[in-house]
Amino acid sequence: MMIFTKSAQNLLGKGQFLGAVYFRQALANYSVSSPPNYEMIKVEKTGENGRVGLITLNRPKALNALCNQLMDELADSLQKMDKDQSLGAIIVTGSEKAFAAGADIKEMAPKEFAHVFGTGFLENWSQVSKLRKPVIAAVNGHALGGGCELAMMCDIIYAGEKAMFGQPEIKIGTIPGAGGTQRLTRVVGKSLAMRMCLTGDPIDAKTALQAGLVAGVFPPDQLVAETIKLADKIASHSQLLVGMAKQAVNRAYESTLEEGLLFERRMFHTTFATNDRKEGMTAFMDKRQPKWQHS
Image (cartoon, rainbow, N blue to C red; front, top):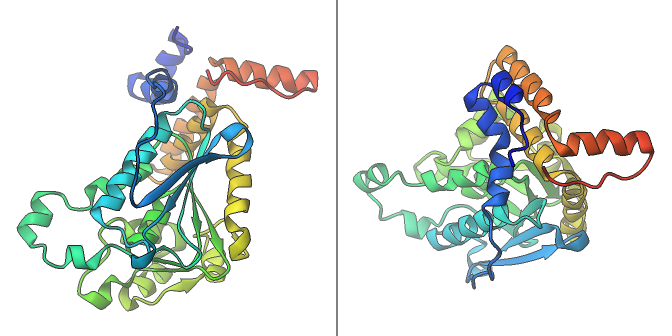
């Protein structure tokens, strides 16, 4: 049964209403299946009751360079986790030496304009930013070029103390192509983004924290554990409402302030048509922990 009332649909309008119920419909369409065998990533469930998905990039000899196969495997695993009703948050990480040192230049170098333009080269990378569930990047070591762009596609970034973030494409005769000039500028501001993109010089974790690129910095050997704590806390809440909050925050990047405030208010109103809003407020008044139905 649809959990949102007709009045909520009228309030939001058809497009925004459908966006609000997007999360629950996806959960209803999911069926459990065995995880596939991946060659360049490791996939596991962690956190309380296995409610956090953990994806580890695993191409150590190439410092997790983002070749086509790795990105295909990453996209496939993310899509499966996004539909998994048992998961409330997802983590993407690499090794202590490198989150991802960039795109695979050996794979990219032979390509010609007709191919990259005609095939929309790198377009598929944007799927990472379109997931319903929150995705957290746990970045140790190098996050350069495509690696930095991949981290920025995630909703939250935690970094190890030795992490380095950069867009060095200018040094090899090209520019960022998977969001480096756009997402970086929106987060750290024009001046720092310009310096990073025009010089190719990276910034360290401390600078990234001060600039707002990352949400926390930890010792390298504690990074993944701290990220799991964060993801597990997020996963303890209603998946439906977490998804709605994520959608509302992301709208801030796509709208004027007035448009964003209107969208937020309508999403807030829509929560009053959900079972979890009723349960959350009832549990608060009863001084007990809520029992989320994710509906």
